[in-house]
Image 1 (cartoon, rainbow, N blue to C red):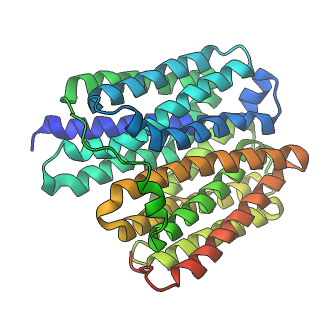
Image 2: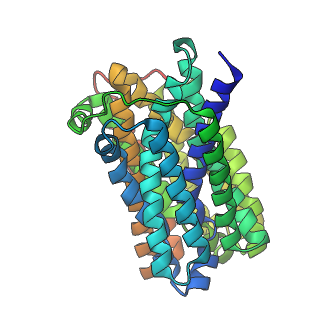
Length: 384
């Protein structure tokens, strides 16, 4: 296998990293963006909700809508759309324009994420498919745990608009790399919409998808507002939010390996229960910069392993239908981001920002309960 083929796979992974980072970038910059555009923190959470909702619809629909188009062209076009959307975000004069740019981001994210893994494995010989798949999904994982902290650090040192510009420049570089590295990729038979309810009828996939929705919604109900939480509850200075979130990201990377030898049920239950406890006690135990930072590091450690656990669960149960099951999980994942950010914002605006933590804890507790009750049924494998 040639170096150019591996570079092509790596470019797809970096493109996925850029896409998912852009989706979640407002999380660490929420206070700064809200203040600049004169909206409340709860309303500013719509910058996460809107692309999540759009992406949840785009992920299953785009592969059908594009028909027989060359996948290379589609992938580059979606990344280019994200570059344009980020440019609009950089110059947005008001919140309405910002939300319009986030709508475009959602289209790009849903389509790119749905196609990227399938394209990556077509670039390599069959014996290298597992490694290529891991690399392609690794871009999303890295964005989940490192993208937001890095963007927050850039925004904290400069301005939130500079953070959006930086990710846009990265995406533009990836467009150039894909133009050079990707060969033509003819369309194969797309995932049919009817396959999604069929996968949900699979008890293993259903259990994992329910867990995905609950754990991701719980995460974003609370984590979307982590910047004001750290400032208001823990007394962390605004210029230290970025470095602290970078620590969260590093902990998240380490967390992807936590409990990797455990069975899936034990892993999902343990991690979601740990996250629930952290969110419950944070308003009481995280009242200083030191204790708030420690709790956030444990939070990152626990959450880093959660998406990996449920994705493993899905792959175990889906068998030969892994592509359709992954499309379903991508849809649910993005829908959960939108749901968590939206309802977390409602709670934060109508109660207090700490209420978003407790709402997130409730969803995490339901994740643990669902994993215990559903995965214990016959036919749901425990190994993973």
